[in-house]
Amino acid sequence: MVPWFSVVELLGTPGYLSPEMLRVNMDSRPITSGYGTAVDMWACGVVMYTLIAGNPPFWHRKQMKMLRDIMDGRYSFSGEEWEDVSEEAKDLVSYHTLHTPSALRVITTN
Image 1 (tube, rainbow, N blue to C red):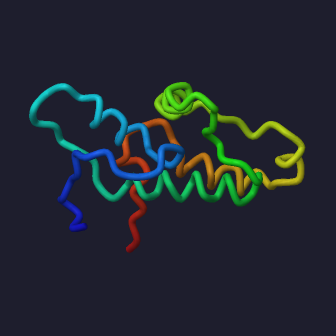
Image 2: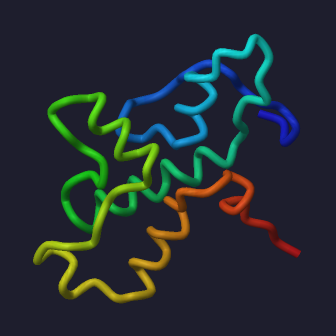
């Protein structure tokens, strides 16, 4: 995908969808700005969380509840699996799963 390209279709596994992907899909306007590659950074944060904790940050047996949690950015680092995890690792996961516009998750290099 080229940097200026945006997608308007909902693609992916529900637990890895970013808030902006869900917002684009819920937008009733005929033309929307869509989402770009920054949603992949969100998915990386979800994968990191899952690798560290052994379970995903967003899961509920009722899919609509899980999607609402994603939209609200509702997850936590509670539980014994997080007791020995460094603050830096938690910060890395948090950075990738910010509940803010995707522009904040874009990583640039000089």
